[in-house]
Image (cartoon, rainbow, N blue to C red; front, side, top):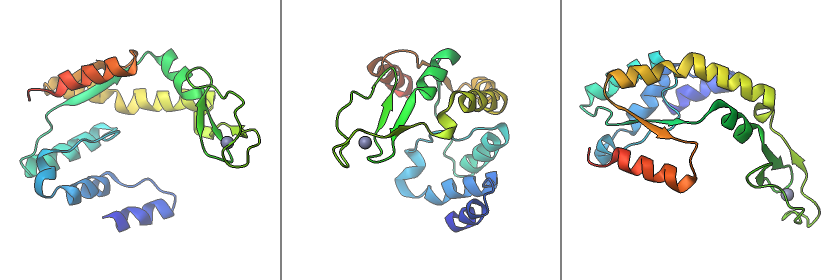
Length: 171
Ligand SMILES: [Zn+2]
């Protein structure tokens, strides 16, 4: 299935949903069936339906769906504030982890910062619009199924961690 996916990626195409679900299916061996976490998938309703069908076939239904919810303005500043060094690859954040003129670990000179195209403000807006159109419907889908756990992602890291921990406990 991985090789199948590679064909699409090499051609610059999106990997079809059934291939992605097939990759997950291939990993579902032994204890994994009862202990897995998917991050960033599914992203669309058809993907969620294909995933459900596959997991139902394995008698391994989803227990929890975590929705990490962050106000849009915060998301834009988190995503669009990210800068990378061309030389050492480290990442910085304008607000949360600013570059402090320390020497680059590569050559001892200054880091050479740049912003990835998809982290630029305009691209971030576009990513959020795609998310709203394609992925947001999953909130209702999983809420109806009684699986949705809303997490306040606007809080500090340790508080977000605690919320997630208590959401998945006692399944
Ligand atoms: Zn550097």
